[in-house]
Image (cartoon, one colour):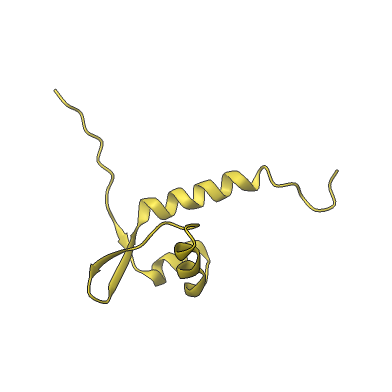
Length: 75
């Protein structure tokens, strides 16, 4: 008997990604092109999207890093 865990695959267009992350649309495209943000994929001609769970994982990673970045003015 095989047990599979399935992740709901909700897709997000760039404006939704921008709202969720707080990043400008141009920053999302730049970071994705540089490999510093989840890669988008084509749903159809002229329709690009991201998986919501990948955006959430990226945000989780960023929030973990904030705890290890030294604060300015603290010793």
